[in-house]
Amino acid sequence: MSQLVPQNEILEVFSLWDNTGDMTISIQHFPDAFRSCGPCPGSELMDQLSQQADNGSGIVEFETFKSMVIDNAHLVDGIEADTLSAFSVFDRDDDGTNMAQECKHVFTAIGDVLDDEEASELIIEAEPNPKGRFQYGALVDKILRL
Image 1 (tube, rainbow, N blue to C red):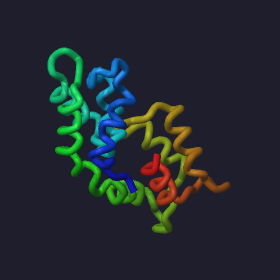
Image 2 (image 1 turned 30 degrees about the horizontal axis):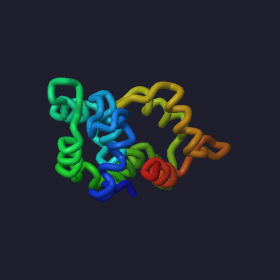
Image 3 (image 1 turned 120 degrees about the vertical axis):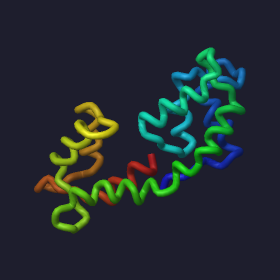
Image 4 (image 1 turned 90 degrees about the vertical axis):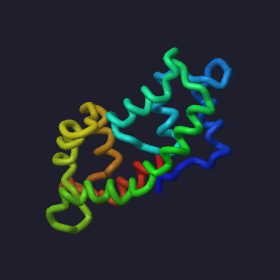
């Protein structure tokens, strides 16, 4: 299950994007760094958080970053259940499976959309059977462990 990285590892994650070693990162790297610490907000909320983190110079300082990760730790809670619930909407047979093509369409059309290549890669990860169905619980496990 997805979880917040321990507080002592937030600096380690942050440093992956700190190209200058001055305890700052570009605002452009903020979303990836933030999500790497565990919270996974949608695009709209991520845009709001990025605006909040930006000190006006396009730079995010480590202390600001750390505070925002800790303050938004609640975004980690319920990710697995919410994701399973979303997939279950398309589980017509109530057997824990979805049709790969139907999900690919949803991935490219609704919410935080994926492009066709990203959706195809996700479907490959889902390992559909010869009838085009996949176990969505297994896919959710893979996604949350990335």
